[in-house]
Image (cartoon, rainbow over all chains, first blue to last red):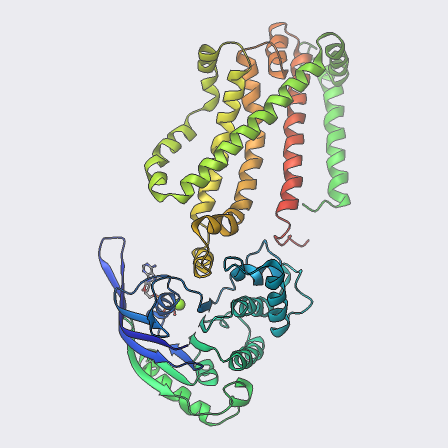
Length: 256
Length: 255
Ligand SMILES: Nc1ncnc2c1ncn2[C@@H]1O[C@H](COP(=O)(O)OP(=O)(O)OP(=O)(O)O)[C@@H](O)[C@H]1O
Ligand SMILES: [Mg+2]
């Protein structure tokens, strides 16, 4: 299922009665099965873009379309995952994974079957009866991915899902996420601060400006092994892409 | 709470010291018995109270109203807290009044309740309900305000209804605060009942305090105070046990 933004702007009301333009005239399209990353400075509206895709808020102007239908509210086609795993601490892992299925009229047995399948998929078999506090950060993120996949969304939205992890866990998790997402053929939008991560995982990268965020560059990553970031990482071209992103974000000027 | 042998041992040691001091210090310092009765005086009086003043009846009555007042008050407080927590409008409208009532000394209402309802169990029950109500309400309301917005958004993204979000996300998120509120409330419940019994009526340990005071029977007052403390303590410990069960999913501090 494709995802499209058409001339989307979003402003928030501020406490003093004014308004703050967070996202300005953003247009892009993510094709079915494509993996697109969004990078940009902190506060430029990346998470806002994600929330609008998930239907949590409406754009102030323009339209967000999922398979050519305007998004008017939360919908069953979209699953999202944040930096925080958002597991419910009072539920066991398997119950957490079932959470998204409960309001969709899926029967108890089928729920359990699907949850167990995703659990195994995300390498968490044997941990179904554990509680979130008993799992490591990386395992919790995998549980969150299993919960996202369990509802079988056509579009997956990821908001810095790896940024709280240590370098090794991150790499392993990126690899397993990339494989899982590619196999399932999901359309994916990844928001990240990590330029290398964007290069390793995406088909295409959108660069946003400072707030109000608008698209200032679009980079096509012409490298193989999208499903195996660990392999892609060894390619010399990766550094060139990262340098390009670096330039677009004017990081050198800012550091000076 | 992790209790090691060392803490248990020291705790018991302190208790023994206090009891010893209670038994021997007053006589050593020449304090008359009617001012500070010794441990053995109090025990003798306790036996007399049991035989002649139908102590058991008073204990049961106080325990009953403590529990009744606690249950009704915390139920009302929790329900009100959740309702206000779901409606920002009403919370804003009512919060100054809640604050005012929270500050007002609730026990001071006791004489009013006696004027309105007479010398029966209604006034002490009402004082207890009133005093228990606020800490539960305030704790629940505070917790409802600070429920993780991202969790609520996740639930919305999963198409949960407003009620579904309440039962599956908000209510469980607020449980730790609710339990903390209940613990505070349990200690206050005893105070509510005691004041109610002190100012009116002829049953309960609070009544025995005013009765014993009137007769200059310090041992009786001592005993009543100790028994009231025990009732409050038992309630608190029961709640603590329930809390441990309910909140089993919270990581325990490692020692
Ligand atoms: N619900 C909201 N109400 C008011 N302002 C908001 C709201 N959500 C976001 N904003 C504002 O919009 C701007 C963009 O926020 P957003 O969270 O989208 O940034 P971001 O690009 O995700 O930043 P970061 O990289 O730090 O996560 C910020 O200035 C933020 O203060
Ligand atoms: Mg963000």
